Image (cartoon, rainbow, N blue to C red; front, side, top):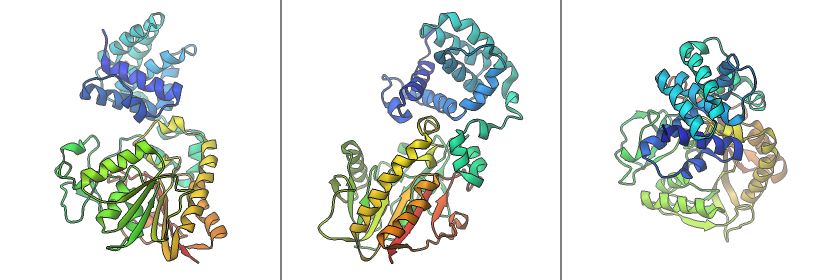
Length: 407
């Protein structure tokens, strides 16, 4: 019997793990299906991607030899449904066996049935005693996160809540966070919240809202937003009264930015170009550079990054970040201020980039203050959030933010 949810979840895993496609892109490429089935497929695939190390540890006790990769993927789906999503044992096992047959893996149907029956019989108790944070985190990432590794990896095991930014004066029902964002439980449909259809709110993690806030744009001030899409920070700057120029090099992402601004009824000049090479006619007193990065700070929302990112990727990204910092410095007016931000947990993309920029560009740090989250302020005066912060509130994405001025 065909199960569209399991088949879609399997297709998502194949796209991420065999074709290095992001989960979001793979989700958009799925055949037309009921929204509820699509959401369930995404949740199941994401659960597998969060816990492949743990799932392998559990399955290993029941496998005499290494199964073909497609079979392992089906075993992951069945085990994840049983252990993490509370699927009834007969459903977790039966849908996996049916999936094997629809994928022409009939010779392995018996193996899948036998293994998953044993896993289901053990139940979630089989997870007791396992070091899940360590099992589910690539070694290079664990080593790079230092003393916060366990707290970060523990937070990655859970879906992230929905955070909202709102126009000044618009009241949103929900948990008001100390930093000004409003939080709703994971799975909340933003389109159903009051304020969405009227263009008064937008989705933005509490950490992602910090860079624009720390730039502290004044009413009527000219501000340059580099690498601006999808536009959450652009919206913040415009809503604060800034006269915003938003620069984005990717045409599709620029379309998303324009669509978001149109829904919100906010204005910004948009420039489709590469921020590393473009130069404005006059320099800006305020610049926000949210640089392309490894995005490891968003793994809670994008667990595919655990599998798509490699240590070597960071070196390539840091070169691009340096080029963008060089360009931003050329566009910064005397007496101006520059916010550099990345949604990354990697130290090479954070403080190391600021140290290098200060050494070569004649800039210096302007230390930041964040009394609502003092533990995120580093000794150098930068802000570094990570998912292990605010555990009682549901965590927060990983971001690095620094403010630079002329020395």
